Length: 249
Image (cartoon, rainbow, N blue to C red; front, side):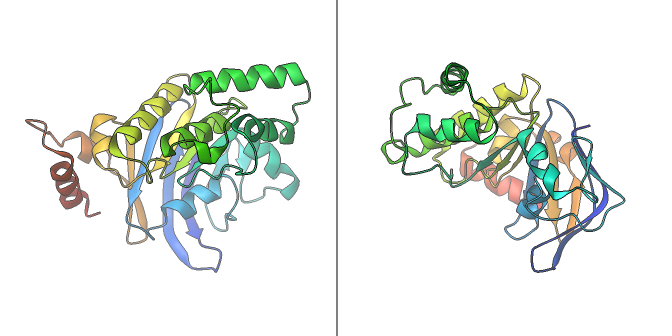
């Protein structure tokens, strides 16, 4: 089990509890969605996975067999090296090229051999379809290309888990679909994906395990989504309305 939470309470930095009695688990290769309104606790939950927010109360809270309730600060870098994180706003370093963005991460995580660094950067850029963009600055790329660089950065160290916080939030529908297809391909190699999203039609097109955060409670609602049958390919707005009505989002 990559992540296992039992009866965990999730708090924001200022001490306000946003989720209580969370029961959540992720295993190798799973594709997991977390849905809910803005402020429902989704992002706070994600931040506990990589220990940006402390875990305060839980019957059990483990990530990669690390006990988050007793995790020592010196062990946090080792925890984080086993995962990749993708943000909605990309968070690329704007003062250096795509290649240098990726090189920075590898060197920061202990890579030293220049040829190995070159080969790994070449591999991940190829994986995300940006073989010819290594010498570009982030501002020279489209939003979709910048998100692909962010994904390349996330998979540099061959993580067991990728955490994606609204990775399609700033993208047009076609680009968003391409990004999800790329993440699905990555999950098929055994890397688990946990992502928050407001893009409800994606859940029909790319089924996965679904958790919903609402009124301070997190529950698995996968079966509710599997029961939704779409006919005659309604347009995106119609699908969104139907999902919103069903899931109260």
